[in-house]
Length: 116
Image (tube, rainbow, N blue to C red; front, side):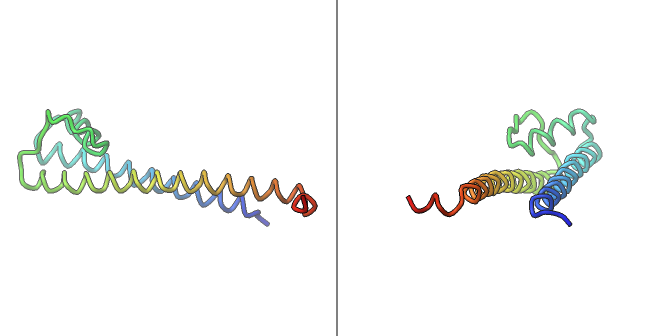
């Protein structure tokens, strides 16, 4: 029998594993795409992908093709969305963990502590 905390931990681990896989697929796929579509070197394609997803965007590399520009737009939205999803999940986990600790602490004190 698993406890509620173990089940939650497995859920969080699975979620972040899936999120990491999707993020790596996005980075890898975009790097390959820009290498072949724009004719950039592998390192330039990787650099452009990372700076675009992180919203740094130095501007030293700019897609020249229409398809490259469209994929870049999608990459920006996907990168921001994945980052937002991860940040939201991390915040939710921190809040839930704190609430669980407070609930457990109040249960250990017992009902007599509420009578003041």
